[in-house]
Length: 123
Image (cartoon, rainbow, N blue to C red; front, side):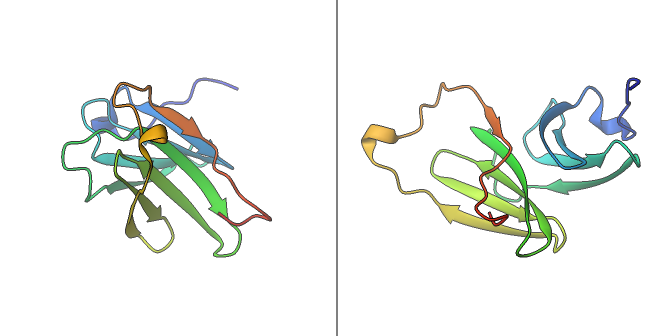
């Protein structure tokens, strides 16, 4: 396969965060607000802005397909909350994270990407 070039110019030198099926989750290298889902096979993409970032960088990213809803979902994990982006519905949901001191997230930890965890095809 040849080298693919992401078509959106404002995403110059984007970071590829995760992939699921034929979609690649990408972000601009200069901020943690704007993201894109890109299908390199069709060269189609959709951009979206996280309304909950408030200048914070996520500790983790995820992209998965929920067969129950027939929808791809993006998850951005912050220190005290996470957000889900429902791609088909163009809808954001914020959830608070309740963690004990023993498993609290380390601010210096590396960002990680997971393909998502599903049970019987459901997130």
